[in-house]
Amino acid sequence: MGYCSAGANCALPQEWEWGPVLNKMLDATAFQPLFFEDIRVGMRESIMRTVMDEDVIGFAELTGDHNPVHLSDLYAQTTVFGQRIAHGLYTASLISAILGTKLPGPGAVYISQTLEFHGPVKIGDVVTVSVEVVELIEKGSRVASLL
Image (cartoon, rainbow, N blue to C red; front, side, top):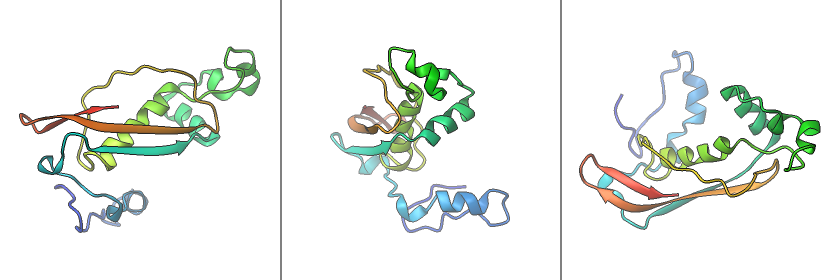
């Protein structure tokens, strides 16, 4: 399967087991793919998400991280946080949402990241994640982003 460019029909065949579900999730009209030549240093994209209870529960189920500080109100009240908090890697995973859908966009895969958490993210908090292009590396058509 090739790169899905703007205006192309990127729908998966309906006969594929996950075709109908993924087609709803992968609304190709929402993506504005960028090619390496289109990207400039200083380009920036952001997303905002309100961390919901179902996000934390879903992330725990997906990863198997059932730490009670994320899932149990009673337990979390006894911690320094005083209430349940989101998984740190849930918030970090939002970086992938930007890189894979906005900048650079569909087809992008990131190679590494370094994380530093400055405080807890609680249920109901609004998280803003931003990336900015700080370097373009011709060899391998790589984009270095600052998060």
